[in-house]
Image 1 (cartoon, rainbow, N blue to C red):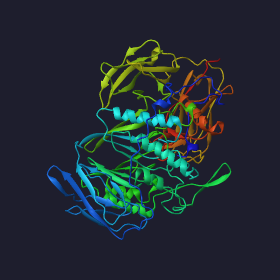
Image 2: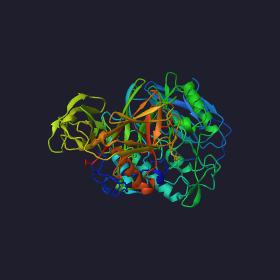
Image 3: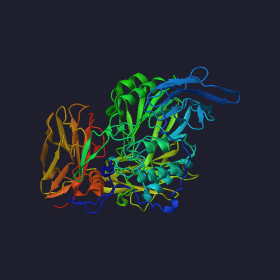
Image 4: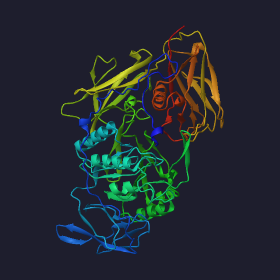
Length: 638
């Protein structure tokens, strides 16, 4: 995402009248200090030989060094990034390189590690060496991080350093890390200087090189630079890529581990075809679509994967939207999951090719007021995966956080007896979790499971013992880490104290350019506190307003929707309940709106909305979140 489109966090003074103060349940973290930044560990990497003539043919051998001696490696994929060949029984390959190629490289095959570099500059003869892997690949851990947005900003450097230290400390240790895009925070329009690009790349790779395991990075449009623009101008599909090549190697590549063939796809091209007005000036922005030459590479690469492996892609966003014929390619080559980033939220979508977004390690480095939250109120963080055979499981970990409340979102309504769950990552000996309903009295939570890397706990909250309205649920580890989350008690037992009618209003299917919008396909009943107060028309994008009799109001009010068709759904603006000229909004809605305004100011307050029901699209984005129930907590003023 463009830096100016990245959300930041809570800002004081949001101009929304409200009788309640809302927090998002994230605790203040100790600020990173410069002493926490790792010293840069820079390694010599193969560089393109820009002035060399591309050979008419490249040949070589892929050799395996094993205890029994040296032999040729058969069926190893070798590529120039445009076409793919495989080695024969003696490990020999031949390939006619594309005139635009800059590297020759191999795909790490299942069960082997590459000795030396897996990519090399073009030459008439290039050999590669493998050795048998030391570790079994049937079960392993890997990390999916995204949107690191590294710059010379000290918070970004301290945060990336903290990530590296955390990953290195995990037990068992992850086998590798994949970063699905926006490694840096350079301008999408390539207006950052080459010197800035060089400095930011050095910071990123210099810190990531401290990882005790390999790391693989997708470029992302914030990672392209204005370096060597004269040699690779706009219109050349290689424009913006040289700094990436010189620090990280090929920007289309694959590797295999266990039963998975991982493919990295960079779909950003600077073709001079897209202009966006920014501050009164038209700037050239990337064309985000995989071009035919690289779509063909992708087909060949997946076709030549090791038999019995399936495909997981890493890219900045959903390739169904950015790669022509990707859905058909996925059916042919068993693509089961896409690991994506860009939108800075933690979400997943079941499409013909499912994808999962990995939040953002950055959160919002560049704005300290953001408290490092993502636009969906998740903390800055990353996904941790365990692979067992062909099964994948995962969880999201906040950077610097071992304790997390995981069962209910911010502002969720609680009624009756409710089970609230939390987890503790890599628990220490005799460490456990406890909870409090008032921040003073603490009770032990009950351990209910031990999934990989963490212990899962549960507490039963009897909401009937609490007063309707907002309350803060707190969890802490016995070693002292505290997390809080604000919920809404919604037992709706007390008679209405109100004498004045209220007005409920929202817009269905509003279009503000951020995502695909939708009206319901059939009739929808609107329910407030379980009572129907009106209906929504099928196929109608319009503003609605319903009068709510005073007798139907409570201190806590719950808005929900009843669809005639269970697969129906719609997009919705922020619902508002107006009482005596005062607007009341859902607690989560208020928190998200404050996140938006922290970055853009009050002009952004109405951007986005919600996805209600089960229809697809729209997909979740930083501006549209899934939510089916909304709460309004009122001052009980007669």
